Amino acid sequence: MRTVTAKADVGFRSERGLILASLMLAMALVALDTTIISTSVYIIAGDLGGFAQFPWLFSIYLLTQAISVPVYGKLADIFGRKPMMLIGIALFSVGSMLCGLAWSMPALIAFRALQGLGGGALQPMSLTIAGDIYTTTERPKAQAYLSSVWGIASVIGPTVGGLFSEYLSWRWIFFVNIPICLLAAAMLIRNFHEKRERVDRSIDYAGAGILAAGTTLLILGLLSGGHEWAWGSPISLGIFTAGGGLLIVFALVERRAREPVLPLWVLTRRVLAASTLVSLLLGAIVLGLTTYIPTFAQGVFGTSAVVAGFALATLTIGWPLVSGQAGRVYLRYGFRLTATAGSLIVVIGAGLTATLSLHSAVWQAAIFCFVIGCGIGLVASPTLIAAQSSVGWSERGVVTSTNMFGRSIGSALGVALFGALVNTRLGGADNPAPTALAEALHLVFLALVVAAVMLVLASAAMPKFAPNPDSAPRAPVSRGPVSRGPR
Image (cartoon, rainbow, N blue to C red; front, side):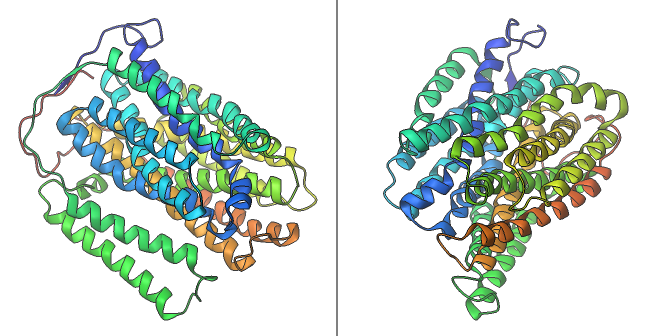
């Protein structure tokens, strides 16, 4: 399989500029969906009922996204990146339409699952295509363009979401995705062309199914324990035991699978294992803030959805702002030093967030989120680029997807764990008092500090520079010839 590229510089005016623009538009779907819904869940829960259930709006989306990411990665290495991207856009569009028509919280949760199946293709395929068409020295600039999408979405998303929720209807936060989906698909079809060779490879559907079942049970146990049933009850213990058992079975299945959906060899390489762990922790931290900072602003400070959105927006403003300069840092000082410095900044920001109380101001939450975003900007891109740069074309899809899987599963489990902390303290109350809500969310912010400390340790495990892909050990199983595209 070979991707057609040009030898122009990075930017919109280059021959690859329209491809870059289409990738940014596809990324915008995920970025907007994350930021636009975060300021509306408090209103959605009030409209449809079930405050205790609202973490499922994030967890189920992230779970289906996480499970589908490695499948898309494997299929992309077989059939090409473009078909997988178009399938993802189609599923995301249908899921968005159904979410906008949802009549109850369970229905909305179910349709979010479908939306997640589409979202599982958009971000990893965009990053994989960028890794294909740009060289190692060009990738920092390309990543800066892609990261800037989150900065733009951080301003537009919460603002539009808040305006829709307060003055129109929260349903429009989903309907607005549909025209963007159509435009992204049209641009991709028109501008991105790839030549590929069919390779006889299999898909590990059994592994994907077992992984989905195991993680679903763990999330169910976390979100329902403490209020649907007691933590030490037989049903709670049974769910956690079954979930853990299925994950053990999954590991055994992957060892014997011809083409495992989540290749265990990826985790045997230092750079890939460390970058995946970093991605998992980042997922938990980002979604913890995305879910609960707006809730704190609205439920404790009593602000509007629009103001709550701006408090969160600073997180994704600081992220791309620093990410755009991160390339200069890690090209000079290495991946390990850059990521470790960034994770220490995240620890500082998370520690400040843990000081929020009833007597704090919303601008303080905004500043703390900005600090965390700046730290993430020094962690996220360098660790992903290190992983991509350590492998060749035929492995880049599965490596990128594994990294994105780590972030998605970290987000899903993180939100579920944080939701368990909140529900345990609130007892499943649909309309908690500000004092009780502040105390419950304080537990979440403390948990974020713990995750940030673990991020420092994971970042310190990164190598200084990524190994040359030609010198790195190859995957233990290779089926069929795959030609590498230009790097």
